[in-house]
Each structure stands twice: as C-alpha cells, then as structure tokens.
Image (cartoon, rainbow, N blue to C red; front, side, top):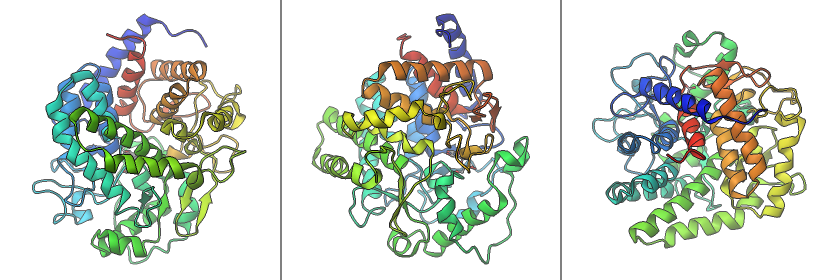
Length: 438
Ligand code: 2M8
C-alpha cells in the first residue's frame, strides 16, 4: 500500500467535516440519517473526539447533550431521543423510562460503553476549558461509579451488561450462546423500521435476534430498571471485554481530569488499581494464546469467540508489554485479514475463517472504523509504531476510496449500513490530525 499523501488527507478532512455537518442537529450529531435519527451515547463521544480538532463548541455541546440526560443513579442512557424524529424502533414510549429520565428528556433505559471521559479529556487538551470539565467531572465520576457498583455488586472490578445493545456490538457472535438460552415469550407486537433503510436484510440482525433484544428490554421494564432486582434475575449478564477496556481508558482519563481540577483521586485510583490487578485474570483465560474474551456471569465461563474484541484490550494499556507482544502477533494472522484475502489490511469484526463470519452482516464480519481506531491507539501506547502506522494508513485509504460508511465488507471494502456515518468521519479526522497538527 502506498504512502498516504497530504493533499489527499486535506481533501478527506473536508469530506469528513461535511459528513459531520450534515448530521449535526444544533445540539448533537446523529450517527447517520434515516437509520439513526437520535443521539447515541458512545457515538456522540467518538464524534466529540473528532470535533475537538476543529470545532470546540460542537465538541463541548455534544458532551453536554449526552451528560445532561444522565439518570439520578448515574446511568448514562444509550439513546437520547429527538421527540420530533419518529422513524426509529424502539421509540421512546417503548422504553417506559419517563420517571427515570431527567425532566424534559426522553431516553432509553440501557447503557453503552463509557467513551465520555476520554472525549472530555481530549476536549480539555484542545480547549484548556476548565469550566466545562468542572461541570462534567461529577457526572463522569457518578457514571463510572454506577458501572463499578450497580453493574458490579460482586466487586470484580468490571461492569456487566444486560443486553447486546449495551455492548454496541449488537449481533456479534459473542452474544449468540447467551441469547440462544433466552425464551422470549408474551412479546407485544412490534414493527422494525431499520430494514427499510438498508439494501438487504442480510446487513442487519435477524428477526429472531430482534425478538430476543425486545424480550430483554421487556425484562428490564418488568424489574423497573432497578439494578438490584435486575442483577439478581437478569437472564443475560456478561462482563464485556470491550466495554471494560474502554472503562479502563476512561478511568485513566478521569484521573487526569481530577488532577487538572485538583479533585480527590482516591476512588478513581482504587478502581484503576483493581482493574490493573484483575484484568488479565478476568479476560484472558489462556496467557499463551494471549486473546481476551468476554466473561459470561451466568455460566461462569469465558465466551471464546474469535472476534475483534479479543484484540481490543491492547487499547487499555494495562497488561504487561511482554504479554501484549503475543496478542499483537494475531494482527498478522489470516483470521484477522492480513494475508491478502482482503483489500484493506484492517481487523474485521469477526475472524474471517470462523464459522460465524458473515461478510456484510453488521457486527458479524464487516470492518468498523471505531474498533480499528481503538487498536491503533493501543498499538501506539505500546510503541508498536510500525504496526500502528500500517493500520492508520489502511483506515485512511479505506474511507478515502469508499466514503464514510457504517461498516465495510472486509473482502473488497464496499461500504454498507448507514452512509455518511458520523464516527467513521470523526475518527478519520482524529487519525489525520495525528501528523497534520494544524
Ligand atoms: C447500532 O445499534 C442500534 C441500537 O442501539 C441499532 O442497531 O439500532 C450499533 O452499531 C451501536 O454500536 C451504535 O451505537 C448505534 C448507532 O450508531 O447503532
């Protein structure tokens, strides 16, 4: 692959900014028109990271919008709904969260990975705006405390998810066994609208998967979203390796914010200390293999599925380098797209030679920009500069040639899902800015 040229980068940056502008609502940026007409939690944080490079107002407003929808118990909801946009299922009424959402906000009742403190630190590094981080700091701390208390009553040091949507990797094979065990019953009738906005149903989760997603939300509603009741009875309870990787990075960012603000650091340091002690034990059942897996709290077993999630803990920068050296060798393995089977040497969401790989089906095969961006950050943190640069060039080449899609077929790089997808554009800007310091 040729070296990425600066002129091309400039052009790409303009295209990325245009994609974000077209999704900006005045208060936040939707992930993509039609498919996703509301605010999504981790999308907005990834989007703010891109804005921090060229539009500090938007970077700040994006984070204000998501954090102002935080619940009293600390939960940051995965969707904040625009009451005027109706083309999405499940709609606000479906969630029955009126009594839990802050006044005037319509929210879902589940979470997504906590990218927010990472985005807040990025914003501060560019804006030096202490007022904003002073406003956000208590919300962020409460959010992390929610994850590490309500979602971890056993004090393992790691948060559990109750729903595949909470992972952000909705139909990943990682969740297949856990959702297969569910017995959805008494579902009220519902109508999917996502299929109206894609080229083929093959790009999206199946109807059977949707039934199970809906059943899990019905279960949460039955327990009034009360974590005590939910944690005791929820039929889906998993320590998600990606969410917890992000939580480690976010805790480090929060510690830095505490330092900048002169706030007490002891609780955050304690969280990080526990994460440091336990990460390998919790997520890496075989240190020779050096891949990381989710942990199913209900079966007490690791979920040994070959997906991009097995490599993302590089991003946490919490495990010794001697160990991560082994993990990094997987990047050159045929499973992960490095051997000429794929036009762009990027890591697909699911290992190419696994039985559950599906090249255009959402989180079951396609390449996603945010996952590769996280691996890139991890490679840099461990000083694998050559590998990091290779990944970065491949991302930039893919988006430059194919556009800002939601996800891409690993074989030929064709884009699928939403067009002008916001985090693909914002993280591209972040990657361009790595060498273009303007
Ligand atoms: C996808 O998830 C939503 C449900 O939250 C959906 O399929 O309707 C996922 O890719 C998720 O990670 C993402 O945040 C969201 C919006 O981009 O879409």
